[in-house]
Length: 169
Image (cartoon, one colour):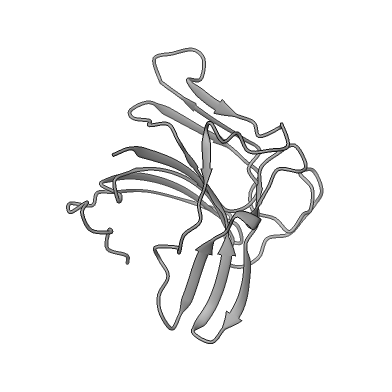
């Protein structure tokens, strides 16, 4: 079993994961090559674990990942559906395993801007996040930036029964 680092939802400029005892990052990616480094990352293509019948259906789709501007941009599109809101967004998952250390995520917060430096606005419900987890959230650390609230939510999870998905609240 592996620990996975994932980046989820809008504009991300740079990711650097560094061990606290080393002066240089042990893993980094600035996503500037115009294509995803598949030696480091996998694209998520599954149903969001927090989907709730009658409320929402979330899916991770490859079409949400864009590297055409020399940075990683992850879009989300939400439309009404017959069984609640249908959300199609994106996530990339690290192929490397990480543990104790210092993690740095440098990103622009969610925005309607089409480019990195243009002015944009935020929409209700928009979240930019980075998280590190292992084995169905047996251990998980989340950092979420809530766009329209100008707030940060940090949490950690412990799933005592990793054979099962963690309970959602």
